[in-house]
Length: 217
Image (tube, rainbow, N blue to C red; front, top):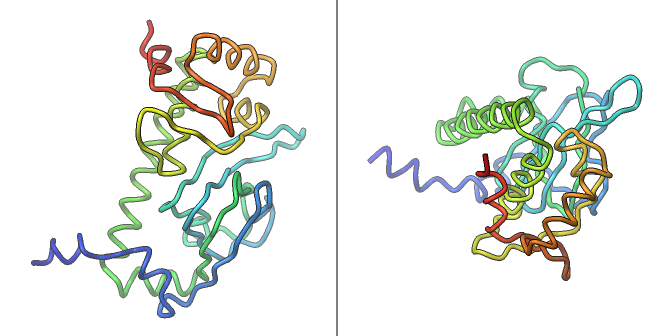
């Protein structure tokens, strides 16, 4: 009975309810949700859209460290005692973000076991993604890293099927995500387009054939 209740728990409905003591904010594409160095006081949840997490080095170089999709939490560092944001969060498309004060979030996690289970599951899945990204960065070429990133991007918009049309994403952002230059991204994007793996029509269309680049030895 307990497992059925957990499966039936609707996180979106719960967080959208008045009992969650939350605030919903709409962001335009490119709008900053929080900036590096801002006070760390809230946990955020992506209701729709997508969010880029990035860190700026002292020399001004930006590195993309995560891409959040609908159903993801971010900004949870406040729960572990972070007083200021270690990085920035930016909407990569029109996004609806739910914001919960850290004190209220702690109370919710203590009082709602189903929410706590979902939150822990999210954190574990996110750690796995970070490990996979690190392995990809250490051992794969920039071409394979770009192909893998393009194949994963539709997940952030909850897209299914063989043909996935994504909102516009700049080559600079792709370069930051995979740790290379915009020129290299442009070279490989042109190559993928010639091979029919991607198309530009009302956005970026990614075909599953791109997987052959990732699997190639």
